[in-house]
Length: 265
Length: 294
Image (cartoon, rainbow over all chains, first blue to last red; front, side, top):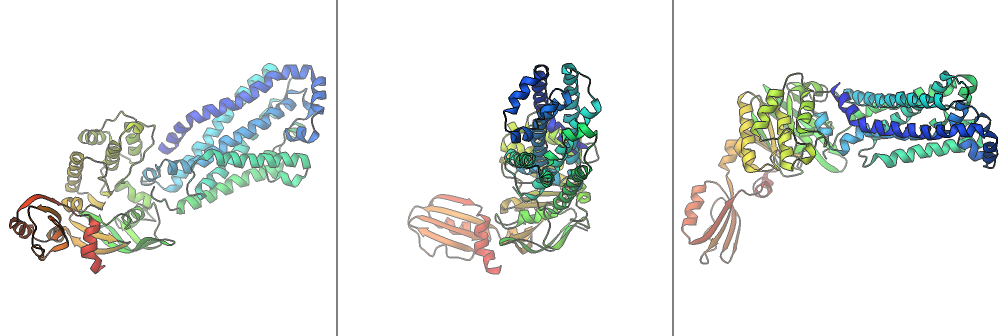
């Protein structure tokens, strides 16, 4: 419990900063929604000038722009992108932070098992993400209710929004296993930016090629807002993958971390 | 009862040297010195005892329990002070110490205040603002606040001024009187001589000698540097116990091992203008004494 609280306290600032950033994306784009939906025909003409591939890649579905949920899927793809970076940073830091700041000796000479340390740290990471998501969804739903023109389903809105957490958990767990395997990470951000953008780029490609197999590679394509709006459901295979990756990565991390030699600084 | 017991402890790192077949035991209530030049394997051994790294082969027990299998349980009664201390930079000293104390299921606040007072440590400063020596003091308090039964010190005196070093040694002796066993690693012989009952001498990953400190004290090594007023006979210092003799005009340099009185008498025969007597580096002693045996 002491490690958990210590970690959560250490993440406090970063939670606040990331949550604000995510909310700002939605606030800015939602503030444009009233004018968007008013002049929807002109906007459609404008976007039709864009190459179709780019439109699809960016998650712009013209037919749905008049509706707030359809509109939401556009900024939400950026929210997920940024959220993924936050989660990956978090996952990478969990173990690497102690090595980088050389506090690992302090922690590991305490009467506590390594698995307990990892559990406390991962839990603190997950709670940080949950807090981010709760605040994000609260802020976003308030803004949505202000700018909406017609009623919308909160259930669908929630179903879309909470996929942020699902994607974040995947990236966090990937971050954890990377930080457990690499002996020393000098700086977290380059690794998380590179990883996240590679997957984002793959998702961009997969939109263009419309090859369904590519969707399995990138978490950004596991939860399709359009599908959720139409079916009020997630796609089962991707729900399974979203469970398998974190569970697998975290379990492997436990095994590796428990056996790892912690060398002198 | 043996508090620490290692059996053929070996750690290999690919090509670079680790430790080979380290076997020794430390009895309850003993202050045991672990001495060897830098890079000889002292820290590697200590890190295995603390299960920070795992042995390639062999085993180690503390309080009769295997360090790998029962690491977390054993550590309840271990206090550890590394040569370089690193803590969470933006915490205050008191916050760090309380965090440290929270891992042991007892109230350590009185003890923290007591130790901080002895070591002249300001509890309300930020760790980041502390000097190297003051960080070291945090390390000392952190290592002793839960009154451990075994204190493991890895080159603990670096960065401490002589006064603090003395206070620290007094503190260790006090803990030892209360029953704590101490494993003290160092590359400075005089330090170990001051404190320890028994020493293991480690070189190139192997223990080359286990000795009572009394035996080491008999082998009192001193480095002499003398400036004479006139040229002296080259054979004047050619006596038992003088090693590495160098004579350049009116400067004489050598390392002496043995009864100090003999060499002092010898010096009194000549007219000197200056003299320095100090502790030779451990490396020098090793090169001259133990290199033949190892």
